Amino acid sequence: MNSWILYIIKCSDDSLYTGITTDLDKRLRLHSEGKAAKYTRTRLPVKVVHKEAFSNESLARRREIEIKGLTRTDKLKLIQRSQ
Image 1 (cartoon, rainbow, N blue to C red):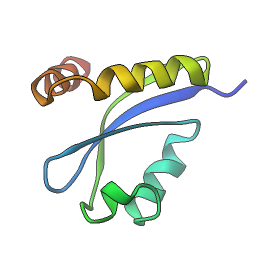
Image 2 (cartoon, one colour; image 1 turned 180 degrees about the vertical axis):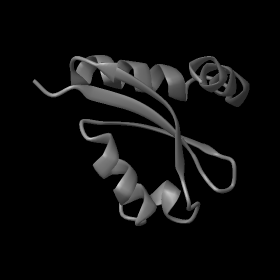
Image 3 (cartoon, rainbow, N blue to C red; image 1 turned 45 degrees about the vertical axis):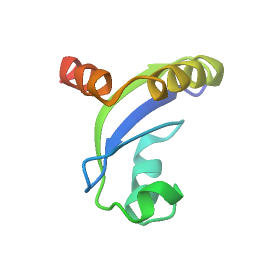
Image 4 (cartoon, rainbow, N blue to C red; image 1 turned 90 degrees about the vertical axis):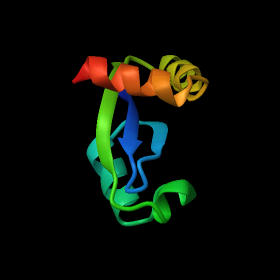
């Protein structure tokens, strides 16, 4: 069974991008090559600043939606707590 990972990356312009994947290393490589998300293509380099593991896509997607609904301040607090 694949584990799903929710991740937050910090872009070169200090913006935050949230996504989910089953292969974080591959997804980060794609982001870094400008091949993953249109949003991150012009904001390279990127760095993973937070991640959470889930047993299925549904749980990961729900958490992604929850995090995307947070304010930037709350996202930064979440990142700070996880480091």
